[in-house]
Length: 406
Image: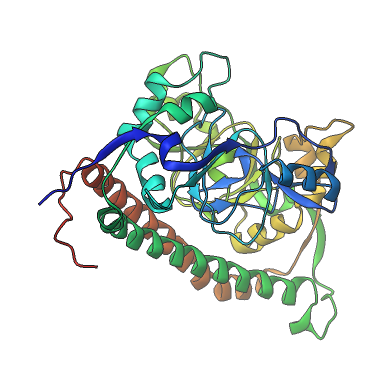
């Protein structure tokens, strides 16, 4: 038998509804993390490119309530992806947050954090927000007063747990796959350091037949992406991934993107098409992110992509590019605070080129690790689709969970 649900507001079911800092303290090289919407991934923040602030500034923001607690629900509320980035915060790091992120703390007497999280991720709720609560400013956003008055329906705690248990099992499997992938990538990075930094298989000395070259020497071509005309709707909505910097966060392979190109969109710029196993490197704005292409794709102009030469291991290029993130950022600044490294500058960065025999052996050693990473990422896409299919049915009470025995 289906239980009765109570309808109230988000403000009523939360003990705290606030957001991060409305001022942006000065960045420092060593300090405390300060996260914004650009640092979001599906299950937490990516801290590798997160900026840092001083201890003094951090303590001020902590006292102002800008540092989330574990199990708080965090929502990206400003920018193009407003109300798309939603997480339950469970990482050990304690970042201060900018005002582009809302902090919601569930009132445990009424709702669980998980029920709040999954409700906000329901497609119907997102549509309600976009249709009724977004501001009319040039930058899309939802303001806190509107957040607080949003309607919120919930059953008793027991039924909440039954509803969220089904989705939580799926998310747990996704996170296990993510952890496995992180470990596999760390193994590949360790092999890279052993071979190409410490030269351990070569008696600790760089072999004489290894060459000094540039990034240009690694690829048959370096492609700087381009965005097809956004005024032509027929260029979008097809099956070809269109890679942008937000797609590159927290993943080894690009297996899904926010936008896709149609056949017409691809045909409008055929020389920008990237084959599988191309290495993408972000070189403008958030620079130094590195990903691999899993299927034929295109990218925007913020990304330079290397199509490996025959005999040059794609995994060597991928791991090498990770070590060059700091170099890319420094070269791309040129007196400006915004990193902008063009294709010519990128291609001239000096690199080491091992012998083809060594690269072949390295490729054979790393390929199983990267194949498993790609397999796990594809499985996660399928699991996410299953979860997203179940979620609206659970929240709309189309699926009755009252008889589930947890």
